[in-house]
View: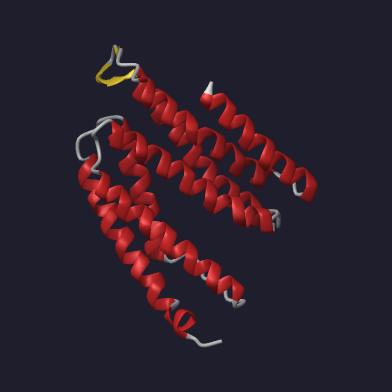
Length: 205
């Protein structure tokens, strides 16, 4: 009941926002789909449907469903950006929803994995802190009329995070090792953003 109510509230907010701004296009809808899919990952993992899959005894149906939804959501991340750039459908709303949807998806999966004991809470805290810092830096830069583009390190850490999370959801050996790599890349790319934006942060009004 709580999940349904939450989804309805999100749909009402974003749906109304899109209709009012008349930017109902495919890339923005894909970003919204990603927001709606994130709670499903939490739901399937929290339900703990522990019945194993016949040909994959180490993977339960709950984990498989969560991984399937997570992968579909991750695909929409690449798809919406590609469609927006190719068809010149980049909008201000899209710039807002796209990174927000990414963070909601990744954080939702990580929170569920903390509860299941598959990833330490402190690693998730490091990753979330980095996201807050970079988001704050981008907001400050935007206020100054400066656009901070995604770095190669940032893109690489995103790929590592996605693969590591899928492996951890499916209990695939090596998932935690890749998560450590993702955390290191997260800190490294965060430092890159801070160094690049240091002039903005230290500038005087």
